[in-house]
Length: 267
Image (cartoon, rainbow, N blue to C red; front, side, top):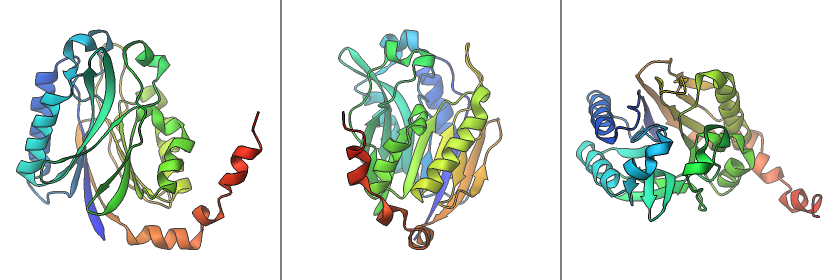
């Protein structure tokens, strides 16, 4: 089975959800004009950017507005939508939440970022999630992650060990650490023998310049496609037959010894 993927890398308007909806809708409509992909991917916090100090004012209550907007786009264009993440307000808590929609506009899964990045003060404004990123599209097991999550290989490995063959990453990764972005994502693909589809934003906000360089990596760690630093729609095709062959050649998941990993380090 093969699936075509498109990552929409765009510059997010700082603290302006309405403008960002216009930008996202325009980019999606452009992406599906010729050779529409099976799956479209958006970056992290595409609705607000990192305007953390104003999230209490601009975060989407229960994600209602974003869900209606994204569901309609998925249905209109008959495309699966791994819709990056939004700032979602639930009571007094705000989460950084990934939303996934099917071609029919059905909300397939929500994943809230569990690892909060203290270097950008996320822990002061956001509440970490507590559930997994596993979901399924067209019968393919997938998993969603958000930015800082990629520095936690045990979190991503746990999803791969539970069947994930595509690891989707939404990010606002800074240009300053571009080399980390590429190295970590390639490592996550190789060690999990899975496709990695990582959509980053481009542009800048008052405090950061972002790297762009959205990237799609195969289970051998080979880069299938990589964007530059500007606005771009990145495309690639994933051939899932490759995963079974690679896992046959190097049977990492059969050779794991999880019963020992814990026992060596019990306090």
